[in-house]
Length: 550
Image (tube, rainbow, N blue to C red):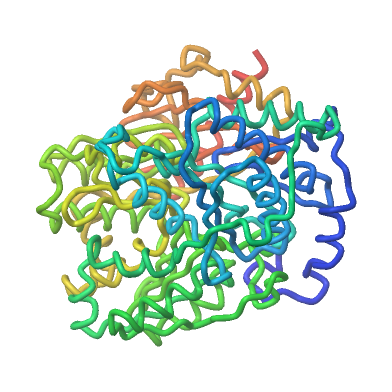
């Protein structure tokens, strides 16, 4: 932890926005250099223009590749496009529009000229595709063309980054088959000097869609907005300078909520932020350092909420606990929803990533619901959310979505807005804060201690870790307890986890390579307390290091 973590950013911490945008147009990537290639992680291609990792050539080529991918898949409907508040988002969206229009794609952008949260774009895709199609997307007549979308966002990344994400017709993050094809084709296009890119002036050739109106007007079909309004629960919503700022103001007015937008400021340098653990500005609502200024106001409201720049993540602050650990709120949300959503299928499962807290396992069992444990990445929840077989899908990194009141799909991408509003609904209906309800869960199931730490790893070591098998782990004990499982594939769907998870009766750890840094991530949890967790973490490093060295 750096000494300035949690303190307000200084002028020396801020990006030079003009230099950033100049570099976007001026620097030309060399795709023979790995750091300058188009690479799609779990949430699209990300990077800084200053490092020649996110520049005009990247977006020209990636957009052209998406056009070609759409043609191969027979996607002929409109493409919805939205952007967040990062400085590079507007230039990248303009570049994308030039390519899309030149290729004859029907494009729908925000009618208000504003910013579009990721969940709002997912909502738009699904709303369009729902008309005239069955649950599997087959045309029933009247609307044979399926829509898809692009979100221009690096999510919670620092102000100097840009991001570009493709959402196919199911409305959620594209799977690796799609992103690998798009990235490979984009790099081919860049290497060939962009000769295959078509572009034109999009002025007057782009259609518009009111993302905000359609999304906000529909909230009563997924949340008990009447209960929130009637209770008068005091809500403080902080968009953290992101795309949800106008949404929160509209939600408050339309539904008559006792809601204050505590910081409506939009600033591409994010000068109002407090620094994260590494002294970087990062709009992460799950970080107590990034949320420090909000936490100091926790006694002014019944609940305070935060969203990242594209509003796909949530942070929940209560007067009695401050910022809740994301795993804690996920457990409370699941417990509440499966007790208060009678319209959901009786066999609807509870989806979690395998690095989320095991207290969720106990909650699922208490509701007699199947736990569906999948690898990291929200894309795994998409099919279940679409057909209603998964009532809730959540990640330990504070990203989740759930079904409408009638058990049908809402979004297939993470939605930090509805999770924040759910915290208010929980207070309105139960009279208790989510943090109080979490303490009640620990009284029933135990009080786990959870933490994620990073350990150094070079490119070769990360590649080996990603291919590691449970059989490669020689250890038979972890922190004094027998190992009962060594996983390299997720129990829920059998998909490779890109690392390993080791489990005992009282603890577990998982190790995965970082997609953006020279580290691997160790997630660990213990039901025996902090000292035992520290022992689990130390032994986890040793176990993984031995496996990588063998």
